[in-house]
Image 1 (cartoon, helix red, strand yellow):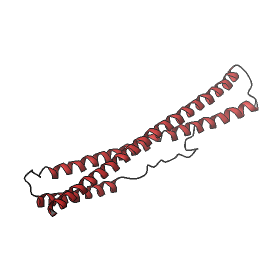
Image 2 (spheres, rainbow, N blue to C red; image 1 turned 90 degrees about the horizontal axis):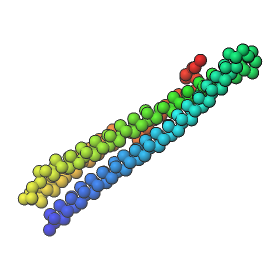
Image 3 (cartoon, helix red, strand yellow; image 1 turned 45 degrees about the vertical axis):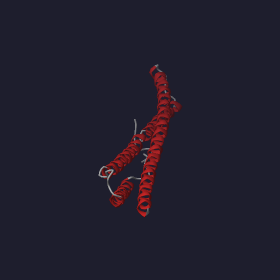
Image 4 (cartoon, rainbow, N blue to C red; image 1 turned 60 degrees about the horizontal axis):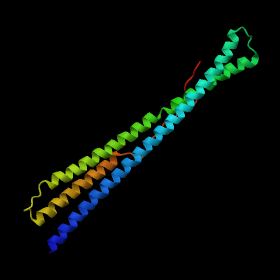
Length: 182
């Protein structure tokens, strides 16, 4: 009777550990995917706003140039506006480039998600590998021993996976003025 309790205890602990490990990593995968989606939406919104602002600034600049080409003499105000528009366009281009950094952040998230999925697959493979040697006629003592080995192997894999994964995704911001236009 004591052997059945020991065996049941080992099986329960193993199954609970596998379930907790799998659930933890799947929750992290879900979180990373949702964060990736948010980054993509935010980046597209920022890029759209930046490109629309560039379009508007270029259009205003073109109107001033058209007046000059029509033979008009540039006023001091026209000259100041044209000079300011170059800076404005540069600011909008910098904003667009900064927004495109989502690619780096999403790559980091996707890489981390793939590591989690690979780690979980290896974790389940280890469980399968150790479980394949248990036959219906295998005795309780041997099953308890094998379950102890598989539990240890899975604990090591879990620790190794955790040490590989980074918890945060980093974004580097370009400072305005990093890019000069005109």
